Length: 282
Image (cartoon, rainbow, N blue to C red; front, side):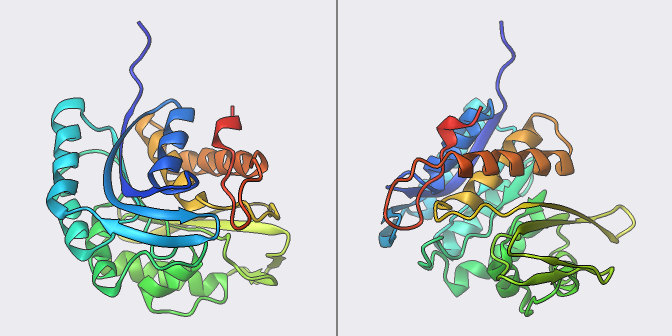
């Protein structure tokens, strides 16, 4: 009898076009050998050009989905994506308060197309979720919004991460670099590198003595418009790999590689920000 796959519970919205949200999460978890379960927070009408409609589920229904999965199937890791409302965010945080497994929180605020997916009240609950999360994975605009700081250099980014980890008592923050504007990134060492050709991701991790450590990864930028669902995919990949027993830095490194392969395998669908090719990753 083969070993059972790790059980990943995804709490997020549905993307009708299949490129992001719950659909991207299920594809990612399945391709990486996990068993995907879902608590859907919202149903969206969207495609590669934008979001044209959103209908939220009730907080009670979101909680019921979570309870149904956790009390019967069990959970080895959780990935949180789009929440949709402050009430949903609160019920999710309450249900996860004492769950003894890795939690990956992708603080979704804006879709790849630019459509807003979280209001101020919902963002106000994010501190609670960051406190519970094993790692939070904001992109550059999300990091600026959560920290209230303008991030222009890597030093700014480190200060913003420190501010968030201190305020929320969070354990780790992965600052994703795909949204850095063209130009250069200035490291704390004084070294400057081009962000036109490279993408940098930084992990800020709180240590046992209360300070945080910093690790970074870089790779050649893949110039493509088919980036719909990159954040969802990365978060679900990290969650699945953590559930398989990887340490956080190792899980991030492998998840980044999975995203890159999916970007390279994009099928070319849609006239806007197209989906990636999860099914082609081996």
